[in-house]
Length: 307
Figure (cartoon, helix red, strand yellow):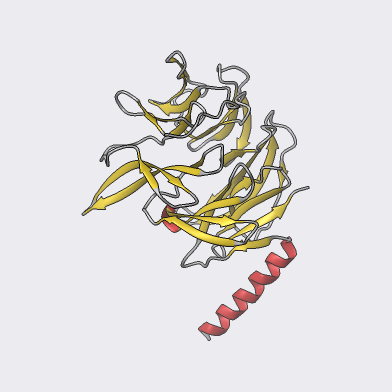
């Protein structure tokens, strides 16, 4: 009887996916889910992780081949592609008994070799960022922030030298050229998460813990309330933001759909609108014509055309 019910679930799930028009590109399972897909800037690869953000894999869209570049815990959380699509920056973890230690590493996606920028530390609450055209990595700290040299050639096309992060319930915009720093409190007493700068460096999107998403200029002006949403990501042309709106029962996700909205808060669209599927963690393709995302129901990663 149990096997019969599993078969029925698989058949119904397949029908739902067929009706949705999604294309599965990376197959996972409920017990071994693949998740958090992120396109490389050149559009050739998608990096992703697995349940618990363990490890990073690279899926080549041309050859449809997959390779793993690390199996380290936490490596798949908030990792960042370099602008030349050759490297991935992330914060990894290791455990000694019950104690967690973190370090910052850069992975070469071709060789899988890593460059470790920091020692393993028991306190690393912030995430690393590419800086100065990828020639440096900036790591906020509780005390003095740290800057590390990456050995990558500076990308001169990246004309902004700002890094943006949250510290002490403030948004901090720091200019590494002159070491100047500005702090903002756009929403009083809020905790800011999932902060991201638009590719053209003219806007910042962020999420308020337990609240809405917002966009503002790097100088703190022109604050726009985007409404409810989670894990916003920019389109590569900086015009649109893609995100998810989730529901949960206090323990597990019970529903999720993927939405797109203009950076000025107009033309909000539900791209999925499937009550029986839980679509999460969307990411734009560089050409803006497709979206990659994962589906909690079957633990796989899909593509959806949005033209």
